[in-house]
Length: 512
Length: 101
Image (cartoon, rainbow over all chains, first blue to last red; front, side):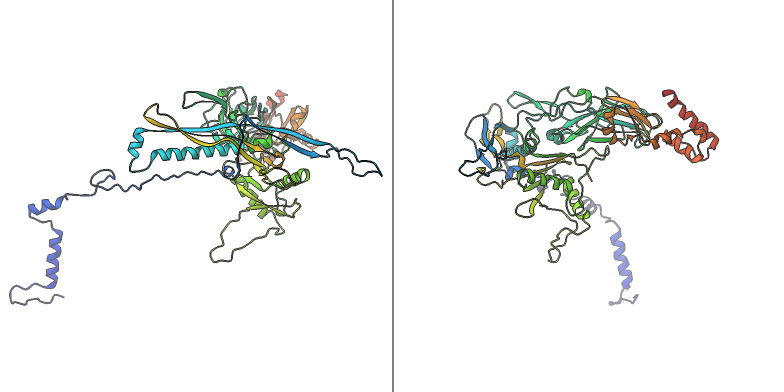
């Protein structure tokens, strides 16, 4: 390696010496101060901020819309035009030969006369609508990026459709939940972290509206007074029943106490809010989908029971009745089952029949067949029930009653099993397949079955349920009254259900 | 009124706004309270339950029974406590209940 490199006969450097000289030169800063200063800084460098310096701001044009607009009922329910008036009215023949007059006749004589049952029905139209606005500066600022006024209109319509979906499912203008029954409660020295004391427990039954909009942190809504865009105001029920009287429960000693509490299930309640603490200072601590709770710690909310009005606010008279509350209404003749209280805090889950079915669903389907000779065509569930039904059907069948259809294509075998439909064993046409659909707004613990076709000849019912509108969706851009564009999207309508007995509701279902 | 056997550790039962204290594992409540309180682990006291309770005299209990007796009343004791001390604690624990009666 250190071979001489003397080619001219002068001072000879070895290759290694040359390399070492280069390395040394690279390591040392340039001694010349004029060159050194030039290299210390650049004229242009990348900005440390995306919004300063000569830096391109790589913003994609057009806002993204990252929120779900899931409105399955609104999408599937037919919309028909009304003809004015304040209510949709119809009359129905509900039974023929209801007294069971026998058909046999004697020679030369006429037969007996039958009795026909008729019923009158009405459904009041209700207006629904929301508003928003875009001020001039917001529009100026958005130029070149997106049309803010168009976004305002689009999102407003979507917001109204979402509210309409809640109403179609569980709007409640007619079913009063009343006063929540007084809880039964038991104090124990084990099972939690409650200190020894006497606790007071208060319960509030909740309609769908209150369940959807209630949280432990934010509280439940009783009476709501809303200031509208035009300065007017509306007061309506937020879905909470009148609170119960207090129940006392004593934790006798120690600091590991717990309390179990339960109330008689309230028809129309899809949830229950629980307040506890010292008498007179009860605080919201839990919202359950069943009619019982086990209290293991101090309530974490801030809303006090004392702040709730002593009145039933379960109804909202500004909306029409949705499917759930038309089914739950007294005299609807829809199938209804509330699962038993079971063990407080645990409740009663759906039951596998160990033959590929669910006992409670079969009971409902059998009842609908036995009483009305019909089969529902959709079972709406919460994700909780969707999962539990699947588990029970798959795990509860020791006789392999299910039929599995495998897609043989490579890569098409996925893990997990989800039951997508349920075979109704009670049907004239053999087993009828009923799709099981998860509804985004149906709370845990409730199942709703709906029927969109009546198996009755010449029923004169084109749609079993439909949205009848006096005025379908319309948008108003209000006249300018300040430097902002104001929009409203409205509709005037009612959910008309011609045959509520074609629905079935199971509530108070425990998770499991 | 009906006498219910309380679940382990229960101190009280509340029904229809009235609280009924559990004494020696039993509580007397109105007849119509039996069904809702069943969800909380209460059941109608049987002859066996009552006989079992009658035998709960600390003076006649063995060491294991004394531990269970004290645990049922929320009193924690160490494993090294002598049987005599256990019996003394159990006797003391039983006194307030007797007074309540």
